[in-house]
Image (cartoon, rainbow, N blue to C red; front, side, top):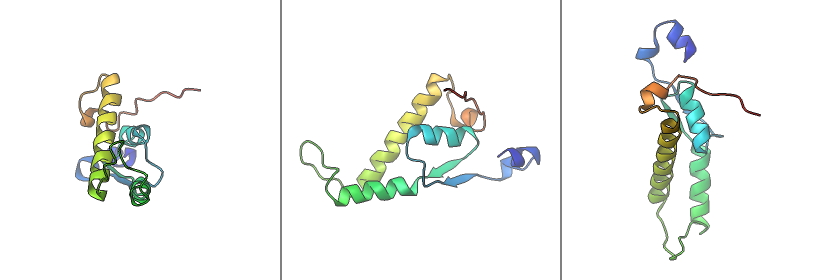
Amino acid sequence: HQRLVNTKQRPKAAVFAEAGDAKEVADFALLFGYGCDGVCPHVAYEALLKMNSEGLMEARSKQTFSDDEIIHNYRKAACKGILKVMSKMGISTLQSYKGAQVFEAVG
């Protein structure tokens, strides 16, 4: 991201992360904060689909979910979580958050 900004080519390019270790909202928020336009958490998808095939994703009402529903629900929850993180910082759009690097090291 920074290299593209410095060479004035960032508006012409999109940065996508195919990240196997990104699975939580904090992981996505960090990637977006450092300039990613999109994230593909393929390992998280595979884990969810495996859990679904083993019957570990049943609701209390014994409702089963299709693979598409599982992925849709995961994406929806991740989007809501990212919006919550941004709103706590007073940021209303992903464009304002992307590449801002508004993080503090704690601990």
